[in-house]
Image (tube, rainbow, N blue to C red; front, side, top):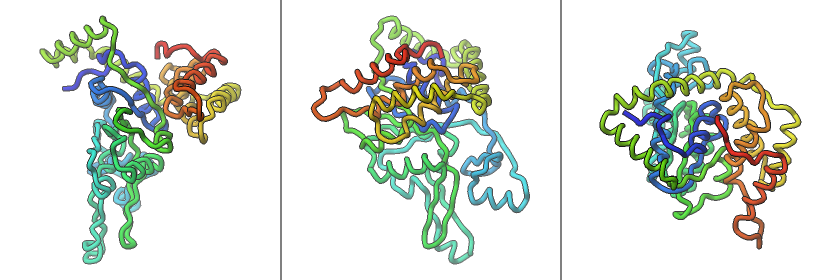
Length: 346
C-alpha cells in the first residue's frame, strides 16, 4: 500500500506540477531538481494510485485508448476488421526507466526473421509501450546517455513510437507523463533538453519544525496501520480524485482571453527565453489550473501561479551577469503585472 497523496506533507509546487500534467498531459512533463529523500517518487506513485481506472483496449500491451484516434498497429487492424475494440479497466501505474537502459529496451524490437519466414509482424514491446498512458519516471535523468534522452523526449513530443527495421515498421502510441529527477550537483542537462520538459520545480528538504514533525507522525502512523491510515485519508483522497476527474472533463471548455495572452508573452519576452515552448506550456498549464479550480476562463492568478513552473528551467543568464540575476528579472517581470503572489489554494 502507498502513502496517500493527500497525506504527503509540503512540496506543494511539485504536487501541483504533477496534477497539472494529469489534467493535461500535453503540458509536457515535470522535471524535479534537488535533494534526494524529499518525497519525489512517493508523490508520483501516490498520485497514480489516487487516479480512477481508465478504459483500455482489452488485451493490448500498449494500453490503447479504445476511444482514441492513435492506436497501435494491432488495435488498428482489429478495429478495421471488426469495427469495435473490446474494453477493460486498468489503473495508472509508474513505469521506471533504469539508468543503463539500451535503445532496444526503450523502444522495443521487431523480429525480422519471423516476418520474413511467416509474413507476420512480431514486435517485442519496450519500456515506451508499457509507459503509454502511465507515468514514466526517470531518476537522475541528467545521467542518461544523450541519445537515450533524445529518443525519450522525441517520443514524448510526438505521442507515438515508431520502430523500423529492414523496411518493416511497427507503430504504437506513447503518450505518457514524463517525470524526471536530477541533482544539479551531479551534472546538468543540455539547455535544449531542459526546454523539452514542460514544467520544473526545485525541491529541498523541509526546514520548518512543525512540518518535519508532521512527516514523522504520518509516516509512523502509516507504517503501523496502513489500512487504517488510508481509511482516515479516504475522504480527502476521494475529493481530490473527483476534482481532477472533473477538471479533465472541464478542460476543453476553458478559455484564455487575448489580454492575458499579451501579458504572458510580455513576461516571456522580458525573460529572453528561447523559442515558443514556454509560452505554449504556460497557456496549457494555466488552463489546466483554471479547470482544477472549477473555472471556465483563465485569470491573471493562474498565469502567476504557473509562471515559475514553466520558466524556472528556461532562465538564461547573459555573459558577465551575476549569479541569480535571471531569477530577479523573472520576479520583477511578474511583479510588473501583479503576478508575484504565491500559489495560494489550488
